[in-house]
Amino acid sequence: MRVRWTQTAFAELGEIRSYIAKDNPAAGKAVVLRIEQVTARLGRFPRMGSATDSPGVRVFPALPFPYLIFYTIEAGEVVIRNVRHASRRRPRQ
Picture (cartoon, rainbow, N blue to C red):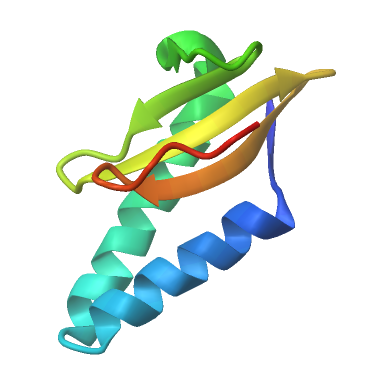
């Protein structure tokens, strides 16, 4: 399946990279790369994430980093809705 990022999710990814890169640019790049790898895998295996309390929204961790990828499956594509640190409140969908 095709993977599409919402503007919100893409902005959150940029914020994550910027925040981490303030202290360690290489680590910021590594975290973003891992999140991108996980989202590519979601395109191949879209149901590997867990269901959430929000109808149609699934979540999958970007291990070994503490980030969660929230996504939906719509019309033959995986839509990345949010990328959040696991300690943050979950997004409203």
